[in-house]
Image 1 (cartoon, rainbow, N blue to C red):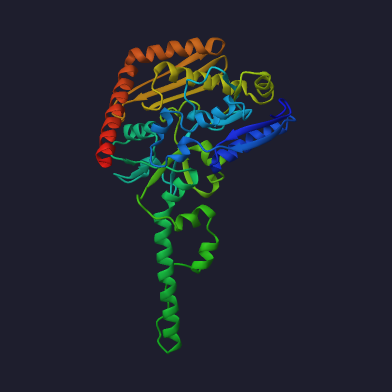
Image 2: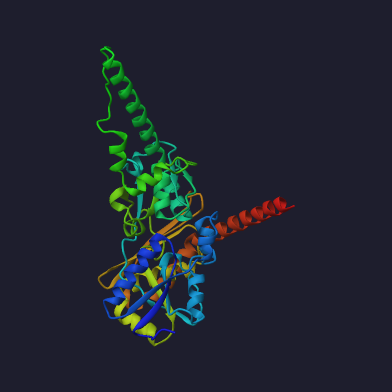
Length: 386
């Protein structure tokens, strides 16, 4: 077992983004004289490839496997994306530290930098988030919102693949024509190549970013006009400067509770206190506590499309909340300034008021829809088994 307060072993998922996030936490702790070892743990969510994010989220599929290593004493702590964490957690476990949050916003990524309003009618937008789907359809009901799974790199590749593959074909064909025209010219024919490309295919390929090169090799199943991702994930993945994107306003596209924040869980112990002292960011803790308290009180979990975003302004936390029907046609939305000094109780009061305004009805309808789909899915699987 590691020596608490000096050497600690922390669980992390093995995805590229998770490892980058864990490396941020590791560096911050090592700056304060901790000796940190990161241990990759495969989660249920990593093993199940064909489930949408909200189904995985219901069971904490990206979280539980890591926390079990901590509860068993095998590891000292675990690093999570806060928005993946269920609002209920084992009693012995605490959120020891919440580092300063990155951007909570969502971003719209397109192959050519278009704004949401500039997308063509009926455009296909990729996301596996129920919240993002409802928000997109609420804003533009003509959009075709299609499921999109995979890590940040994979999603970016799926978006970029069709346009890049078409351009590669055009460039390859143009180069063949150029070579043909050169050959004809050498034989005395006057025709000369008039192409729109000033570089060879090889030169063009060599200038592509790694994510673009991988996109060229990807099989295209769905052609997306745009995809929506968390800005924090895009920036932490190192892809932000390779992609064209615009921020979606957080007041209109309210982020998921805890989006952009990381959390380090540990047993309620002296180590948790030590980590809290050096790593916890009080402002981020208050803001995310308000967000997650409202989510817990509403009881929507990952089944209902819910956005909650808190931002400390002076002595208050300004909170925006949206609760949607799954198709985005109905929405209960409100904003309130919650006093920092009693932010938990005030957040509970806000949630109760939202429930009375109709949020409860939308959440119950979402749960019923989800149970109905689960039932039909179960029947389908049973029939296949037979």
